[in-house]
Amino acid sequence: TDCLRITMATLGERHQETLATMNNLALLLEKKGEIDNAEELYRDCLRIKMETLGERHESTRLTISNLAGLIEERENKHRDVENEAKEDRMMMEAAEGNMVE
Image 1 (cartoon, one colour):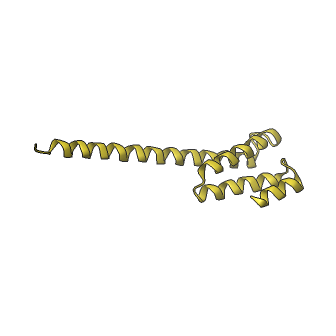
Image 2 (cartoon, helix red, strand yellow):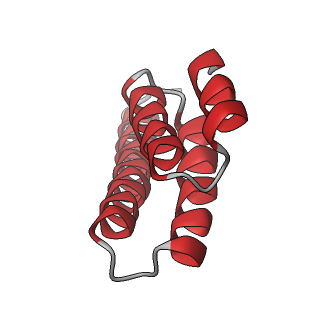
Image 3 (cartoon, helix red, strand yellow):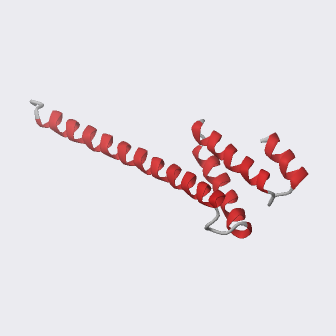
């Protein structure tokens, strides 16, 4: 994040290179599994892009896509965990039903 800090100090928060750095850093954080940090950076980047470039700009749409992908992946993981927990409960209930006192 030193790179982002230096880029912001040098070029400013709204410069396209700064926004590209924000988006790329968010992508890296996502790949590292730092989902909350990645989401926060995507959202900050998207807010600035919407204000400066508009929602139809290719760069804005890229960040929207990246953020949507992150959210979808998080929801899928959450759904997988819920399904695993449900299966575990069913197996426990089945095992309890087979116990003899």
